[in-house]
Structure formats: C-alpha cells, structure tokens
Length: 201
Image 1 (cartoon, helix red, strand yellow):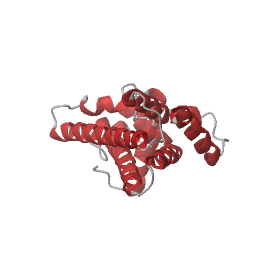
Image 2 (cartoon, rainbow, N blue to C red):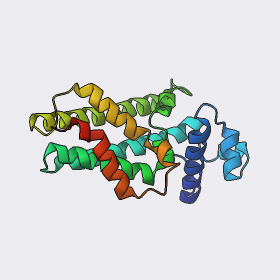
Image 3 (tube, rainbow, N blue to C red):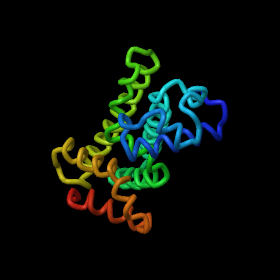
C-alpha cells in the first residue's frame, strides 16, 4: 500500500473498515473515507491508489490471520475434537480483536475484483483471498472428519455441519457488538457447547 505514514496508514485502514462495516463497501465513497480521516478526497489519493486497495489491505491480512491460526492448531498433537474447540476459541479471539475487519469477511470480499478487475493486482488479491478462504474451510472439514473418525462426533453431513459452525463464527462480530459485556471465557464455553454439543457422541 502506498501510504507515506504508518500512523496515517493505520488511521485510514481503521476508519475505512468502520465505514465498510457500517455502510457496506459499495456504499462507502472515497469522500466518506476522506471526511472520516479529516482530509480532502484529492489529498487521500496521495496516500492510496483506490478504495479497492484499502479493501485488499483489510481482507488479505485477516484471512492470513485465520489461516495461521488454524495451521497452528492443526500442528498440535491433540485429539481432533480439542482442535475444533481451539479453533472456535481462536475465531472468537480474532473477532474480538478485529471486529471491523472481520465484518468484511462474510460478504464484502466479493468486491475484491469489482473496481478495477482488469488490473493484475486486483486479480491476484481476489485469487489469493479465495485460496486462503478455501484452504481454511477445507482444513476445518478435514479436522471435523478426524473428530468423527476418532469417535468424538456423530456421523453427520460434514459440509452442512461445518457450514453451520463457520457461518455462526463469521457473523459473531454483529452479535458481539451488542453484547460486549459478556466475558470472553464465558462466550468461548457457551459457543463450544452450542456449536459442538449436539454433535458429540
């Protein structure tokens, strides 16, 4: 990203993420972002190439955080059911630490190639994000299957079960925004029970 100042970079990204979460990427204009950081639209272009560049700078790092997290869990010599529990804990932690960026994950990624889809960097970003997203989902499904094979979970339709769990975790940011007083440890315990409890043998 062609930002001249690390502090300015953090501010532009943080304010943009908040706007994208509140209004949606498509409805947020460069002028909205410029107003939020206290500068003219023309001046903002001294720091960024496009609105899509901001979206890439928000979505790709959060996708990499998810992948790094699930890889670390998968490398542990734990029973698969304990790996699933840890993945849920990690997703909760990532959501609490990065609520605005996480809010872009369920839907806003589709805009990664919309603004300048003929540009090579836009195509690369879109493909990279899809690859990271697919990798995460496939590894989650693999661990889920291992938990079934180990006898910890019932034999269920894996894709439906994993879709239900991951969809809940991806939308957690919205619910948690209205329930911030709930202790993180309590949230972890309750979500693990609710998401996995009915699937256990």
